[in-house]
Amino acid sequence: MTKKPDQLRSHRWYGVPGMRAFGHRSRTKQMGYSAEDFAGKPVIAILNTWSDVNPCHSHFKQRVEEVKRGVWQAGGFPMELPAISLSEPIQKPTTMLYRNLLAIEAEELLRSYPVDGAVLMGGCDKTTPGLIMGALSMDLPAVFVPAGPMLRGNWHGQFLGSGSDVWKYWAELRAGTIGEKDWQEIEDGIARSPGQCMTMGTASTMTAAAETLGLTLPGASSIPAADSSHARMATLSGRLAVEMVWQDRKPSSLVTAASFDNAIAAVMAMSGSTNAIVHLVAMAGRAGIDLKLERFDAIARKVPVLANIRPSGKYLMEDFYYAGGLRALLARLGDRLDLGQRTVNGKTLGENVAGAACYNDDVILPRDRPLAAEGGVAILKGNLAPDGAVIKHTAAEKHLLTHTGPAVTFADYNDMAARIDDPALAVTKDSVLVLKHAGPLGGPGMPEWGQLPIPKKLLQQGVRDMVRVSDARMSGTSYGACVLHVAPESFIGGPLALVRDGDLVTLDVPKRRLHLAVDEAELARRKAAWRKPPPHYGRGYGALYAAHVTQADRGCDLDVLHAGAATKEPEIH
Ligand code: FES
Image (tube, rainbow, N blue to C red):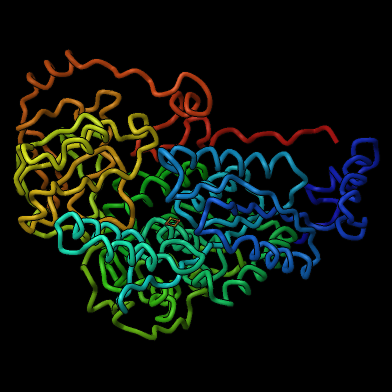
């Protein structure tokens, strides 16, 4: 189907008679455009999450010009609309608090302006799900332009990986095996170019998920930000957005339960970030798909880990690109995917990955030589997490995957920070570190505090991993036996709130179990004595968020933003 110019959504702003449309046209001409520039042409909103505070998107100021070039080339009218930037390393308390704000902003920018289609420019962790959630809700033709990974870090000739090597060398600094001078040099060398984190953190996990969902050009998510291919991909995406408008190729015609299964399979094959679980559940909710945690576990069990990328593996995203990138990985996954799902370019996923070659079998492993036979993530249940919890078991020391130990509890992050290195803390390598008040409401915003630091005295004894349990998330670049996303969270009286020092906690990954060895009568007594903490916010966005945010197993979206009855377009011209 091909639309006609008077069927464009923007026609209601620019193509009709009357005083209001006069204003739309005259004010657009005020910016130096002629009627020929915009009349009867698809208006392509470019939602640009560039800002001075976001190093991962520092190339977007240039890239947006390349997207515009593609829109012009294809006969569209580009309209750059800046959207909140969500800078993962700098925003406090956590970008996750604001993912839904970006999603609202994306949806309402597309709704309230004369937009026919969109190019979504994101990549730094929450910007990908935030933009896509908004676009799914608005359901205009849209293509996602991933920021792309930054170049490998470098220190003394060794490669450094975002996040992963920060945790690693921070532990070494605290253990005394490196000094302040080394630490300073690592700070200088770990982030060398524009682009998102170049380990398999949340950013590269989510951009790959977006590509597998069919929302980017094939191969787009693997291109390093600094590579000239990235600029060409941006231009092609601008061109594609115009074509998508004429063809009325909306997200709802691309995104299905099966394409979400494909995205989950890709995440598992890359041993991607646990954050993807929360985001994919929320994204599916916008598309009217009820994605349950169990689906992640079921898919993980039949998908091998093929990407040998840190933190689970050895290499970095730059190596992944040179090895053939996501197309090569998806081609290798083959029968684990539904290759008939449609994508933004009008082709199926199978057509997009057909013939993709792998140039390095050590980076993208063959099916008969996987990094792990199963995907990296397991969903746990038990009396400590009735609605579920998550562990990235491929990034943990294997001996901890079946473990029982006494709890060492922390009331919140500040309590943990104040006591974790106290020589008097009663903790051994067999203890289970428990952090409370770090969930969607407790954090607030479910910060990435789930990789609790190993107590210094244990580090000095050579301990590098312990079982840790929290209702927090964990950076995709983190590692360790960290049980995350415990739901319901402690702040609302979930069982995690009731754990006391010395209680025995059992983690049994093979049996997918998380158990607190305290009998039900005692738990009921503790629950009766539990008091709801005061809310973090009395006003503002935080209060709105707290009133509506869902728990981790529901994706932490705002309940009013899940798919529901269609929002009517305004009828005024
Ligand atoms: Fe932006 Fe990691 S800090 S992607």
